Image 1 (cartoon, one colour):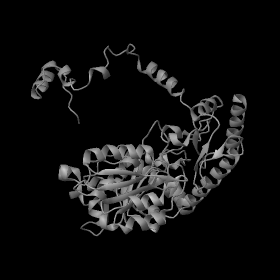
Image 2 (image 1 turned 60 degrees about the horizontal axis):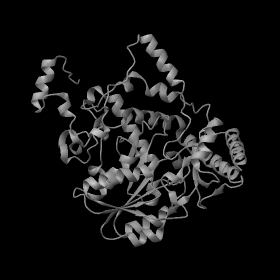
Image 3 (image 1 turned 30 degrees about the horizontal axis):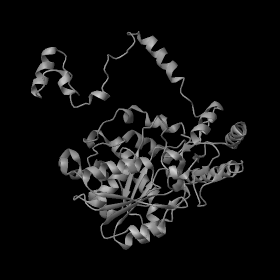
Image 4 (image 1 turned 90 degrees about the horizontal axis):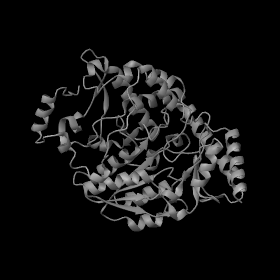
Length: 451
């Protein structure tokens, strides 16, 4: 429990202990231009009932994706969450549980974590998975750090079709740790094999690609694997839409060394930027270098099955700065939700999920690109996202779509200005034929009005 000093004497003693006289002394490192130069504009205190009414009123202003069809993906995906998922995941045993350092009182959470790891291994066809990380971007970072090793030196090649937020996060860590990042050019919406072959060298520690990539396009993963392993670099596959694994080959089947993925869409709803769930799986040889927590299955002195945290000597609470990772927690509750979700769907249900996303997205692209001025940007196969050149800027299109009660696609000009006026649309199993036809009619009306 965090201790909060209640008296001025206690506060003064704590300030003196850190060499400060006032609270203001602690704030001196913050630049004056970014500091609030006035008192907080807070309303007067309200009774609890009035606060509840006010907060409910604010919440009702939010758009509900059940009533406002969304065609926005780009790393966060709207999938149907069966009612059993929140019903089980929000039970007090899971909702209030803490770090399971004491296995004798944490068997339920440890078993759920173990089942989660097992399912991630089954999805990715890898040998071992950890108990999750913060999100997909930090999972990709951890893959790069594992590849460069304790020295933190070497070069990591990154496809420009990797999620832009993941690339920015990688750049932040590369700057701090000392390894070099080099982006690979694209060809028809996917990683250029020629650029990869030219960039590979003895200094290359890892090649990171996303599959399906940020544009929803499928990469030539087998060719990339052959080129990567020719130089003994590690082949890292990032996945932001795990529903794709219902219809695509698992990364282990085409030679991936590490899989770093985002698990938000596995039974967890979309929020304003989160919460997210990082998945991390690897081949068995990296077991002792795996970042984060790892749950294991064993037997107790009576021969009964038991679950424990294993290989804890890699972790931060023991090795401090020499730990395999500085991430010292995991998204356990979201991992539980993902476990329940996958168990509820089963293998056949998960396959059908992928097939529905695939069919509906292809139908949507066919209908959208039939509108004058809307053309596909790339010719490569894709999963549930596709990039389209548009006659109007995406920002203008999306503003007009909001007036029609529709959440539009992702504005690609923000991160890929060389593509011009382009939008990334996403269609999952939650979008019906009626939703798609409503979007098409709205786009036709918007373009017609502007012309």
